[in-house]
Image (tube, rainbow, N blue to C red; front, top):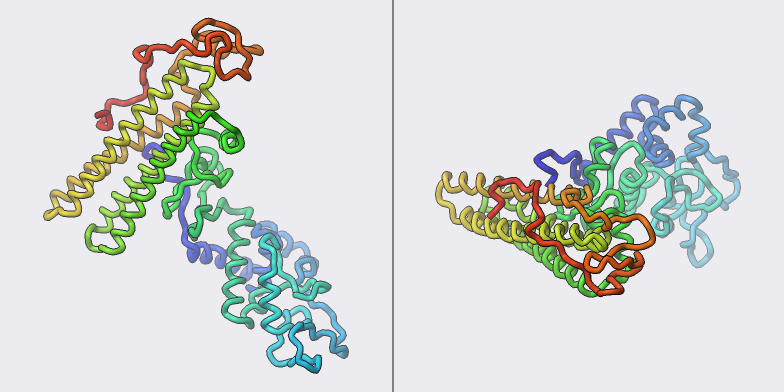
Length: 432
């Protein structure tokens, strides 16, 4: 749906993100001769800003280590108070065996205390420090590796979350879909403005990079916020719900297909699975666009009758186009399932790929037309008149902008659909 251009972002697995994170740690560790433990703590402290970490290490390494809790904390070891643990025996003593402290301090805790402490941490902490509330010694991988497997997994996830959410040097974000572990990374920061409204994850979820809500083209993030907090007419909500149900039906179709492929892995070749999957994902995106076009209609054409009619005209064409595409998708996919020779499969690939491209281009221009303000329509001179009122198409009575309908005649004159023209629709195969 992005024209025929390649998406300017990558969808990464968590392991791929870990590789990028570890490389960043290894590079700093090798250049400045600091341990990987210390490099990890420094990156978390300075929010994964490689340039800033490099500058601070070059300027005053000792000061940076002191600020980040990597300097040794002097303790009076003659006092047994360095053993701080809640799990004491009946006689009030703690078994010294198995007690763990950070490399920078001597406050020892048992594994149970460490687990309870790690579980209590807030997600937005930049550096984990010693469980003793009066100690600033940092906790790094060298300390965590002495704990249990569960604690190691927790810390690994904690670091990875810090890398994704706090990283100032990368355009990287976790997919907001529930239970999705994919991560999105934009290659260029300036691409977010153009492509950030419709980020497509491999899990099938599409979302807006700016607000992390579901993809809501052609309306803005502010429109979404206003829509969710505004009471609107029942008829508008009904159209929204109807198109929402259609989108959810498309999502169910994609899930059914994925389940079928898992159970019948040899039913289609990998190349053909990808083609069908892309078609089903496109259907979801298009249904989503039609759903949000209802919101566009509500906020942007309420007092511009000609534009409102034109938008409804475009919506009807878009709906018909989708129905035709769905029919093609189902027929071609069924053909591929029972194809006996390579020629039939070749025809299937060409036919479905072409249809998918055509529908994607159609909706690309549909979205662009709305985002540009439906400039193809020449509104009447009083549709956008400046001032405290709007003029009714039927009786030209001046109504307040707070009035949703004309106070004088309670309706508006409609322009003839025959006067409207769909200038940007190309004469391609998606016109049926």
